[in-house]
Image 1: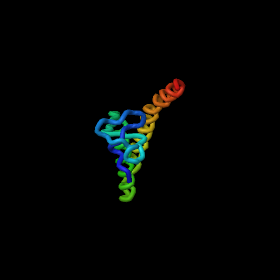
Image 2: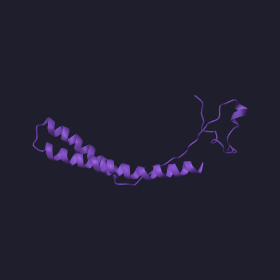
Image 3: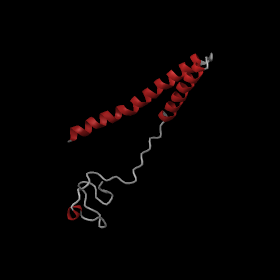
Image 4: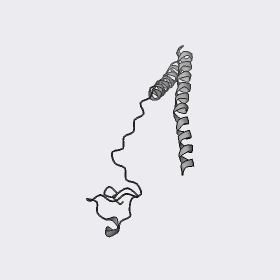
Length: 105
């Protein structure tokens, strides 16, 4: 396996410390990403966590033949639908921006 950590990103000039890939006979990397951090501080993650906990609780309560199965199942469905709506609301602007970006090309 070739170590691409010393290669530059595609289209960019190599860093002074990076050895020349052509001189070493190695393949150049198409993409070099370092220290990538992505954060999306939204309530969507909390809603997803609540939905999955409620779904797991529904399964556990169903196995125990508890009378709480129906209300917990209803709450799990509501949380799942809210999570779906939040994902769609977050994704729609991305689609519009991608179309605008594609038109500029």
